[in-house]
Image (cartoon, rainbow, N blue to C red; front, side, top):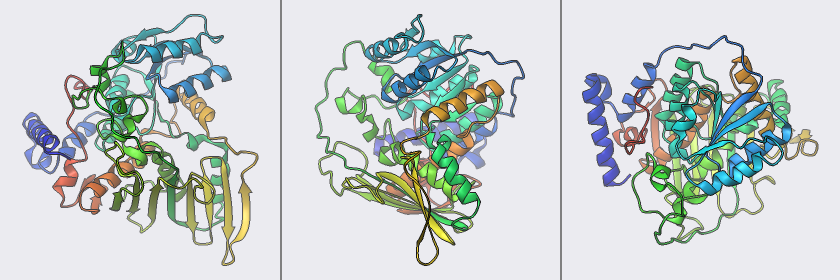
Length: 457
């Protein structure tokens, strides 16, 4: 973290101390203020009112992944109506509107660059939010406060401290929340789950996740003017004020800490979520060891390393391991993204591409395999259907805020360990690092006004 950011964080800490007056608690770290705010949000209240047959949706962020979501909803004939499109780039909304009105609904959705317009519409039941990561928590908290259920793309948090706030807000307002961890709903996941629960590989002790794909060098580009019609200040939102740069915009914003979480928080979070699922953890880790560096992409215009290796240890001794490489066109075990679950009787190779293989005993005897019938079924339609059903029944989703936070925590804690001492001890109950103020300061961040976290949540 640079000097300017450290100064901003320090000012935020002092301000929050003055606001609450709970000096002995808050002085421990900037994260303490967020934990306190989360705890104050209250208990669950779920409305028992009959749910509408047609769900009216607000679409916030009209980029590539939202195109996938909307196209899926349209093609499956889900009983929904698209009421709003929201994006700071009018070209994105134009493309999305054309998709929606090409045979699905005759009335075009209303358009706005202000997500607040969507939230102020009492006719909107739920929002699908697929923006850069730095906007996730501010929008999600405001949406829940406005009475909207939310499908929030992964990761639900840009920094660790936002996770507890989202959990608490969902409880207080009785909102349905689904993180976009689609493999939680995949047919191959359900099939693998049954095998693991039946004990085919014994007790799972270690889970390993990887992202192994080729990446190209994005050479630095000069700053320039934003595209015509783009509300760039609103695109920056809570992020620091900077001149427009093509790399810090559509698609490649993921390379910068101001807006994204690097490879581990972009593609890697899918595989980390599956690693946590396979390991069966329902807690936070107690120790994190991390390293990262430049292996292949010298000159790459990014804040992040091109490779990382992170290990998280849990209280019962189980381990979760993550690796990413920028040079493996062949993937690992045949998959660009995948997992291995190591048990006391064998192991399972699992990929979110829709495949798994089981090997048991001292001779690695091949067991059940899935790679043909379910290949490529990555869970997108089932996950969205699960969200819509949860709205109608007021039930919990497969990727609830609690589940999502435990997976997103791996991203944030891993990056913090890499940026600081390389190896850190973490208190899962207090949700603070032990004896490392520098690391605790990185659990939160400064927000640029007036786009920060909503103050009335």
